[in-house]
View 1: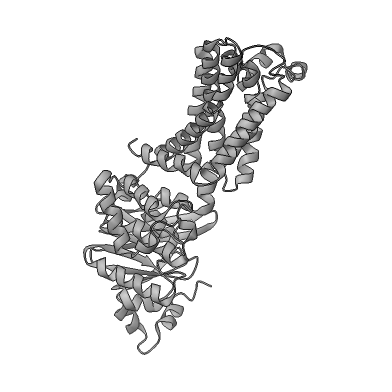
View 2: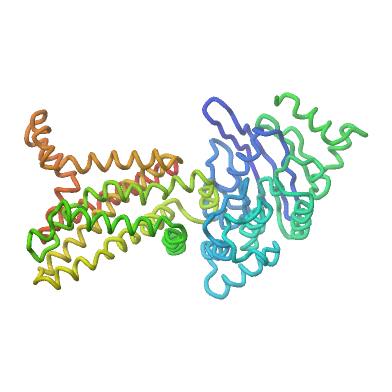
Length: 239
Length: 240
């Protein structure tokens, strides 16, 4: 579904992403872990076609992002970090705009907007402008935007960041609920999240993949140890 | 290009979602009418013509259009929505065109809202309608050229203040090259043919013909090619 091959991105002297490769199949929820600055967001931005890789490539459903970025963007749903939105629009206006850009017109547009609002429980705030929303609701709008066209692949950059425990739980349920037909990549700092919903884990450190396995295999590296200890061992060089 | 209409619509309506549009329209109309009444001696001229109204447009645009255009890209960059926009299935060119056209439509609206001035001269005398029409056409074209510059400078920075100052600076240069007060100074440094060539790049040189009632294809081409050129650089700046 999503295939990442040898992605490289350099900022000035610093190599932010250094040959990252992995594949995500339909039905996978891939947890993308790593210390801050390890290259998680940069990798995601290259997969979604926002940044151009210096080397390597990513394909989504067989379409190469370096060859046809617009086609990849059509297939993907992407929740950027901090869920940026246009503050002066209302929830409905914003989602209608996204639907239009995604090629839905007239009744079909209305239907997709309603579906997204329903899925993410935005009903109570649908007429509010986005600047008046709490962090949790804003994050859900970002979700609604990413899900709107029912994409077969989802890239979520820290989807639960800044949410309270109840909201986190809700977001996880949402992701789990739709993962069967989709390929999902989500980055996070929260290790329990990986245990709770992911069936695969990738840990990156200093721009390189240092682990790519199931949560159980990760645990088996140091039986009895807590996940954050294993994480610390794997990313020791990144300090 | 199928993505231009939704982008255009969002941007154009966006002007009216914030107070920016209303403040801009009021300031633009007050300032333009004020300048022609108090500086241009509109009534003392005792002519049913709007040339004393349009005369001040290049100067007014110098400050007001950068104010309207500085947010075009800077705002998207600062708030991070540029990442949202460019992970939607749109090309950079479509986004640049959609935003530019929305801004241009807004400025056109502002210019056309000066219609009470037209009503006034029509009531007071017998204006030359052709000249009024070409003046409006020239103003709209010139506004597009100013906005092209602003859209470009705004794509260079996420800071709106820098964007504003940069665009005023570029526009000042484009304006002064053809200002009569300034040409003796240029003449003392450069040979006459250089000064004339430079004057060809000025907004004033090309706008003057329009307020005299002349539509010269050269002037139309100047404004249109300036728009195309700045938007091309705009795309390059964003894809960098």
